[in-house]
Length: 145
Ligand code: 5GP
Ligand code: ZN
Image (cartoon, rainbow, N blue to C red; front, side, top):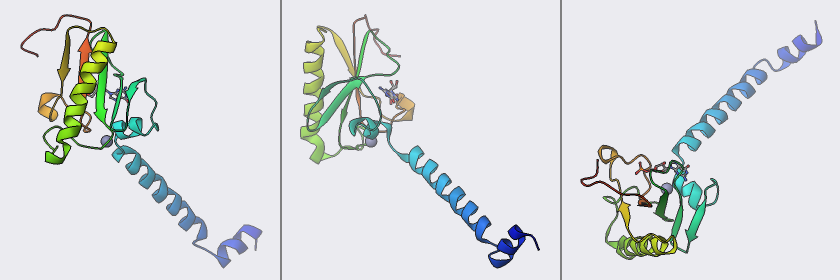
């Protein structure tokens, strides 16, 4: 009997079990990665971004795909899915987000700017962690498209 056959005979399922375990762990890892919120990752510093403002409750960073010369995303560090899923307990935080937007606009020298929160897929929300788009540096149309 050859050496590898002796090993298989002693422990016939071991290689298969290890392979299956690795496959399971890999699939589990992919699922966790997919479920992880991008903006929570940015707030935690796990995902790289160009942060322009940060305090204990808020992070603001440049949008990856800017729609205006200045396009900043302002997010609460706390994971809230959308404006509609915020609650009474978030009222101070929501005020802070808007005040931060005004402060950042001033620091960027934006006299005129637009502040937008897309709420829900139908309104264009693609990242389900509450965020305000602060945009400026060009003329904006109204009504918004
Ligand atoms: P929403 O469509 O949800 O209102 O806006 C999500 C915004 O997040 C989009 O403008 C998109 O360009 C931006 N975005 C998506 N992923 C990332 C990322 O990993 N980093 C940065 N900086 N912006 C992102
Ligand atoms: Zn999040």
